[in-house]
Length: 498
Image (cartoon, rainbow, N blue to C red; front, side):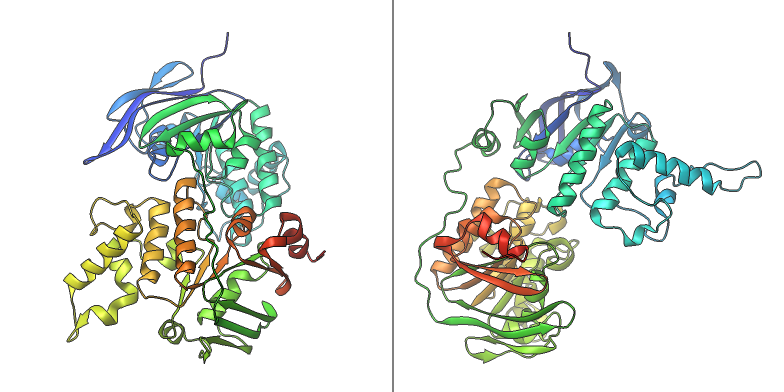
């Protein structure tokens, strides 16, 4: 007979005003098992996580720990009971050491009350040894990569004797080697008897790491089942409620005149001698490993950063170095990689965010025409099928996929000739990915030149008419759609083109 679950949810329901975020959801997490939580943005995953972690109290339903009923009065109570959450973006104190972050507020002390630094460092080393990772407990947190910061957060959770580890999109900002190390840590935790709840939009990661999966849709439980015997298509069907026939609905288009011309663009120490064209009606993919310089090229082309040498032209018109306003006036738009920090003002309303790029057209005699701003925002929110309660709500209340649609709406409202999109589908669910891909394909069919930067190779291969590949700040290959493969792109991305 199977042991009772370490943590279980029974018939949880939770509403926020008129929005029913969870509807009669049950879940069991067992020791030594990695359990995936799947669902589109807005399916209720975040609400369920926060309920398990004591952030929210359910309206109905209950939790049990080791088979006994439990009520968490807050996150501290859940943590003390052995339930820890590792979020996508760790929150460490940058000026404190790794060990001090792990034992913040409870560092061992000597007889006279002074902190026992030797004991703190020894305890941290013991935790890292348990995780089979090599980190220096004495180094400051400020210099750590996102991957190392997550390891520190996991060590902190273990220092509280955590038996349930909830990992919310932990791999979104990691490289392939960092993901492999994180998976090794998770497997080590499983072998030591921890129960792991793993949330990811990357289906291949779910199948590689987990033994069971619970799928939510519109706040309701669709299935909780073993992964053995399931396919990615089966899981997608449960998540979106339909077959996802075309994740990459690329339309065949005829490339027109050159819309964006970049010649010998150089930013010292970042990238060197980058030249390429993007024509009207085509989608050009820009691929490469993290750190290759792709996002930096996009920022420089748009004028966020200054270049040291080279030229950028839009429709034959030379752009001013380091002038985003000039780039916008010429018809260039940039959807940045980090939508929260660079693409949106999270406390502002949805309508105001969409309207930020069109202030000149909605200002009359120095005053904002709120009616024009709202009309413009409603039009684009409808076109992109943004899901929201009120257009006046803060954009931070939206799911990640809908936030991405608002960023796209903001820039598409300018009527761009050239659209640069950096990681357009990072952190969004498969259903929304298909919608974004369809939108990019339709824009290209309408004559917009699209430069798409992505770390998702299937996305690059599925959507691009041509693939440009960067390695260590240089363009190493240009591969036509007909001959582009994962092998050829990765060969160029690692500096060994075929």
